[in-house]
Image (cartoon, rainbow, N blue to C red; front, top):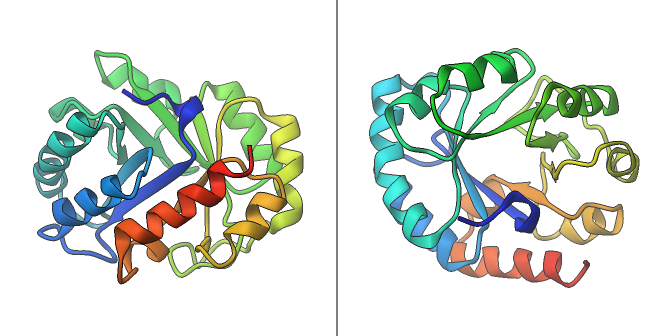
Length: 210
């Protein structure tokens, strides 16, 4: 299984953008494009729906040796052998998530400020999402943290940091120049005409800036 330290491009199968039925086919294209890690996110979906889709996605991620992360629900990780759970600021604590699952898992946390990023590392997160870097329809309630915070968060936090929020191939160079080593791309990937090609181009940009 690919480690977080080696991961640079994080994709999300977000059921706000794609149907559950289309999920596995889209994931195949993302894997072909070279993504390093993928999350399943389905706000307002039932645990049964999410667990059933996670089972299908897991077959693909296992053969590709990339981690599959469930968003919000530790219960999915109890039902399906996903590699991790991602929590938001208002979800269960990292400690509580780990206590619910009887095997070692990765736990990531969304952070929206330097203070939250530092706190998440102290709390025991394996990685953080940091953003939104730009305004994004996925997170309308959060004002963008902006490019100028990227370098500072990398100085203050030593676990892997995935910058997220409104990042697309056209603004990715500015995010990398600002100090990002790892990014999450959601709508840019999911809505691309050529998903694999889009992922490949983003990965190439990330790889060319060590």
